[in-house]
Image (cartoon, rainbow, N blue to C red; front, side):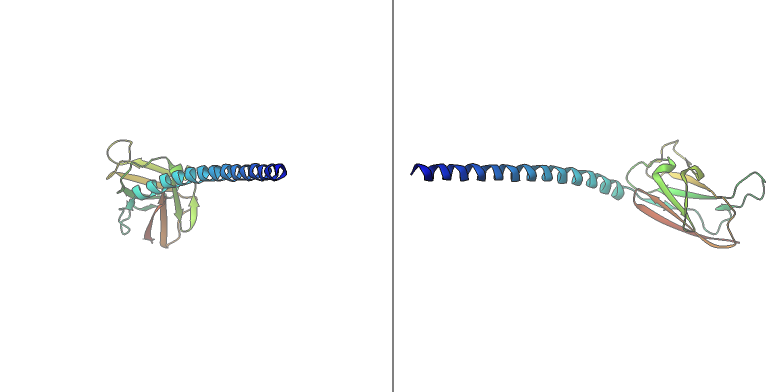
Length: 160
């Protein structure tokens, strides 16, 4: 009888150790998953609250300047972009991605200045986005893609 009690006790202790190990692993995984969901939900909230619209007129001559008037000037694309989202946007170029005809524009070649309401790009505010190009654009159709916190806007214009 005593032998059965000892073996039952050993099996009970082993079962408790296994259960404690499984519970510890589950608690750790649940905590990591919860933290990941919190981080992801913050990013999704920022994406939902962010919205921009390019309001420049693609038919106007103000969008592209080939720099021919000033020999030291580089060719530039100037776009007016309106913040139509719920949150204030940064004017730091590192928070925005720009492609011109499929080529990435580095942050050093991108300038963002708020046109009205001071230095803060609030909801309803308009910013002037200047893109300095390495070389002049060829005659024809061109495409600029501006991405801010997941919101993507496409602007197409003709240079000629």
